Length: 363
Image 1 (cartoon, rainbow, N blue to C red):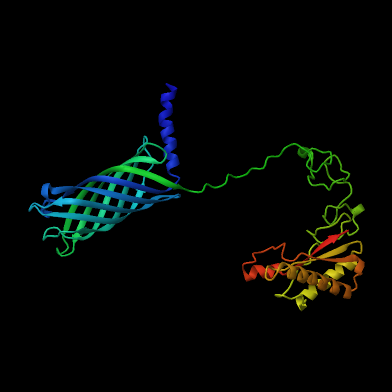
Image 2: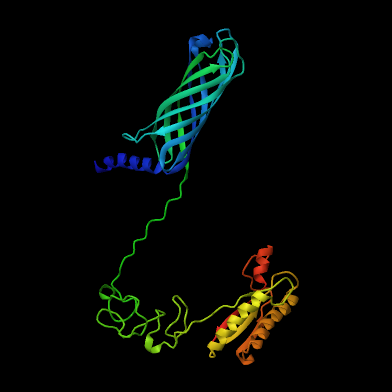
């Protein structure tokens, strides 16, 4: 009994999943009931249709494009004709009821008649319809609908021709929406993240610097006034700027000195000279550091030529640092040629970024 009760539950789940699809395509077959004055034999004819629906994730209203075609309709006179209708509709989908999805539509279109007569001519029409979908699987459903069409024939003085279309077919849903990433809720685990000997659940200072002596609440007994992670009693630079990267002595580290060059050039321009001058000041304030200048090129030219050019660029930066008063023994230069690009060498912008020098600091 429990297994039987699971069936409607699974169908309902499938229905909910179907709402996550962006597109629907529905091949249809049916019958067109025409009013008597049109002169259609038996007042009707068979037809086929193809409907495309474009769903919105946040709205029950969807756009629909439909094509209806009647390949073989006969007049009372015995002559044959064909009908082609193209329509654009707004479709409103209601909430499901017992695994049935009702919908209603409203729109407009145009009808083309291949063999017109005085009673039946091509023209613009308005349509309104309703129907249901019955899901078989997550993506496949049976579709039944009825559509009324009121046509204004092009030369009948504004009178309406009336048609009622009934159809049945299958709807296939596809094109899933990207699902939003699930919200990540942080979970506090009772560990000792800052390794100060006080568990997280009892630690009022969860980010105490490593090695700091703490009280019962996990807060450092010796303060870190500038918040650089180095306690005051070990901080040789107690007033480091907020957010600055510092060394083990608490002093700010300038890790990068990026200088850029023109094509096939190792000339240092005025703007680059200002950057090097600032770097010289840093080296003077931190005499326990050495600097390695590394030169690079773009991919233009031979690898051998670029290797030499990259070395010249590194040497050019070293020469300026020496002019600024930095001891030669604290400086070294290396040429990497074109072997280490940081941007796309197939574009001018990328090549300009690759024509550069970098600096590595060593204690």
